Image (cartoon, rainbow, N blue to C red; front, side):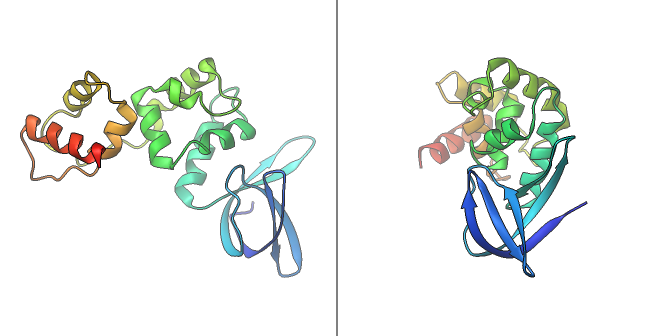
Length: 181
């Protein structure tokens, strides 16, 4: 099984890149990520009856999320790549944890039913948000959602919340200020 390739990109075609490694060119599907120059890509080798396809990713966490999404029944590599085009790995995982089907269904090929299935299947399989301050994470999210903020955005900023802020009202104030920056 292939793990990574390091080489020079010599061509782009239909969301694929041709990586030249020691005089051998490898076509690697990258979706909306279209890098240039010298690089290392981390690979998922997808084997089907009619094809062997390489999918390339900028880092291991992105590859891991792609592979987790593939475990969802009915979601194939094309839809998983489209899902990754929505933003960073952290942003997408936050959306799954928050149950934000509307955000996930923004990806081409991911409808409302597929988004709900992804949330249902992966919610417990994602690594939990760690090192939260003493106030309840759910209370902060609920308070800010009532003000019209999205859970995905709130969770993103909660990860950066300083540990020395312990009062719930101060935590909410800090997250609000962080969102507005």
